[in-house]
Every structure is written in structure tokens, then in C-alpha cells.
Image 1 (cartoon, rainbow, N blue to C red):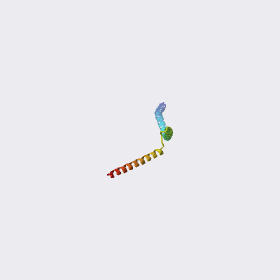
Image 2: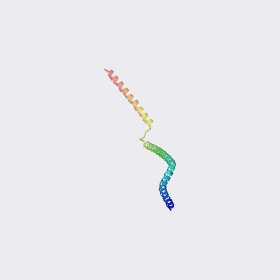
Image 3: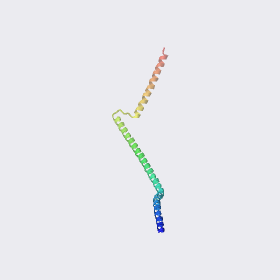
Image 4: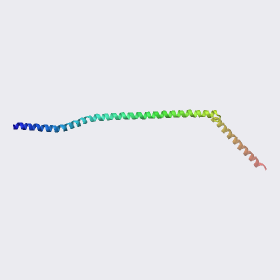
Length: 130
């Protein structure tokens, strides 16, 4: 009987130690599986980061394209408006071409020079008279 009691004690001792080890074993198993998954998770994170960078670059390019298109539209609208205004001003008779104004300026300049010459001559004549 002593042998049976001894065997029963050994079996009970094994159960308690295996239970204690079972809890630690589960934790160790979970940790080892996480360690195995870490490289896969890192690769996945890198892939996600590359995808995000590509998406940000596409959004930046799209924004720049929209800005260029809006700027182009603004310039063409401004050009159209300027032309319409010039046409309206030209129709009313107020607008004058640049050639006409340049000719008028040249004519005014020449008449001024002629007037200066004539006043100088008359002044010189007066100075020579006794």
C-alpha cells in the first residue's frame, strides 16, 4: 500500500506541475507565435506606407493639375474680358489706336520744335535791331 500512496503522490505532483507549466507554456506559445508574425507584420506595414506615399503623391499631382487648369481658365477669361472691353471702348469712339497716338505725339513734338525755333529767330532779330 505504501507503494500505491507513493505513486499517487507522484501523479498528483506531476498534475500540479504540468498545470503550472501549462499556463506558462501557453504564454510562451503565444509569445513565440507573435515573434514569428513580427516580420510579416513589418512587411505589411512597409507596404501600407508605400501605398500611402503613392496616394499622397497622386493627390499632390492632382492638386497641381487642378491649380494649373484653374489658372489657365482665369487667364483666358481675363483675356476675353479685356478684348470685349477694348472692343466696346473702340466702338464708342473713345479708344484710339496706338499708331494714331504715336503720330499725334510726333506731330506735337515737331510743332513745338518749330515754335521754339521761330521764337529764337525772332528774339535774335530783336536783339540785333537798334
